[in-house]
Image 1 (cartoon, rainbow, N blue to C red):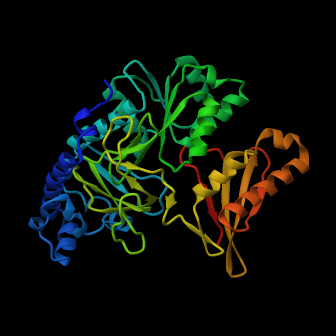
Image 2: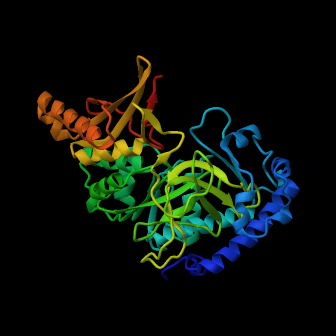
Image 3: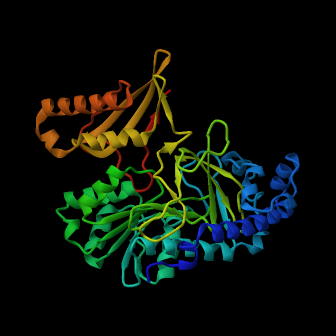
Amino acid sequence: MQYWNEQYETMNLEEMRKFQSGKLVETVKWLYERVGFYKKAMDEKGLKPGDITSIDDIAKLPFTVKNDLRDNYPFDLCAVPMEELDRVHASSGTTGKPITGPYTLDDMKQWSQCMARTLWAQGVRPNDIAQNAYGMGLFTGGLGFLHGAMEIGCCIVPSGSGMTDRQVMLLQDFGATALFSTPSYALTIAERAESMGVDIRKLPLRIASCGAEPWTVEMRKDIEARMGIRAHEAYGLTEMMGPGVSFSCEEGRLHVNEDHIFPEILDPETLEPVPLGTQGELFFTAIQRRAMPLLRYRTRDITTLVRKKCDCGRTLVTMEKILGRSDDMLIISGVNVFPSQIESLILDVGLMEPLYQLRVFKKGYLDSLKVEVEAKREVYDGGPEAIANAEKALKAKIQSTIGIGVGVEVLPLGSIARSEGKAKRVIDER
C-alpha cells in the first residue's frame, strides 16, 4: 500500500476544491452560530454565512491572530460545550497565557488520520518499533505522534524527552527502527551516543520524523550522516491540530493535508494573496475541525506554496521549508536576517557543530548581532589558531552571503545548552 488514504492524497484539483468548498461553507456556518468572536468579526465586515459559497470566498473572511486566542483564553473560541470535548492540549514556550487546543472525539480521529498519513509517507509500517522522544503532556507533539503510530499499528516506545543517556540505551536495547523527536534533540541524542562510544549507524534505526521547530536542509543532512538514517519533517501547530498539518514524503517534499487544513500565502505587509510559487506568510483555515476551528490563522511562518506533480504520486499542495518567521526576523544594519539563514551558513563552513546562539544587542543606536557557536572537536584540537581561523571563516561567509558584518565567537565545547525540546536560538539583550 503506497498511501495511507489514497482517495484524498491523490485527489485531483477540481475534486479537492469542491471538497474544500463544502467543508468551508459548513465550518463558517458552524462558527457564526456558535462562537461570538467570529459572529462579531463577520458582522463587522458585513458578512453572513450565506455569502461564503466556495473556497474562492475565503478571502472575504476575517483573520485570526495569536492575541485573539490569548484574549479569549481559555475556551471563548470553543464552538462546543466542555462536556463534548475529548481532550485539551496547549502550546509550550510562550509567555503569558498558553494557547489552548480543544478537541472533540471526531477531531481526535481526524488528527490521528493526518498523523498516520505523515508517518506512512515517511516509511513507518506496522512492523516498526517507534521510539517517541517527544514530551508527553500538554504539548501536542508527543501525543500526536503516539496516535499516528497507534493508527498504523507499530510498536511504540514512549520514552519521552530528556534522560538522553537512556534514550541511547533504549535505541540499543529495544532496537527501535523509527525515532520521533525535535531535530535539535535528534542531534543531541547523536552527540551523546558518540560520547558514549555508541555508533547509532550500526543500530536498526532507519527513520526519524522530526518537527516542532524550524530546521535547515543542512541540519537534516547532518542528522542523516550522524545516525545513518533518513530524516523526515512533520510540520504543525497547536492552533490547527498539532503535528500533521504537512509532512515530507519519500521525495522530500512537504505535502499539506489540505482536505483538513486549507493554506494561503499572503504578503506579510499588505495581507493580500500572492501567486502560487511566491514567497510570503502562511495562513491556515481548519475546514473539518469542530471544537475550535480557526479562520485564516496567521502563523507568521514564511514559506512558498507550490502545486506541481510530485514523483511520490501525491497531489496535495506542497510547501517549501519554513525560511523563518515574520516576527522572528532580525533587522541588522537594515538587512532582514532569519536564524535559519545563519544556521545554513554555519553548516556550510564545515567547521562547526549545528549548535549556535544569536545574541542581539544595542551598539550605540544600532542593533548588532553576535553569532556564538561550538566548533567540531578537531578545531579545538588545533588550538587557538585553528579556533580563530574558524571564527574568521564563518564571519567571512556571513559577510559575503548576507552582506552584513557580525561578531563570531567559538565558545568552549559544551557551552551551549543541549536541547531536549525546542532549541532556543535567539537571545535578545536589547
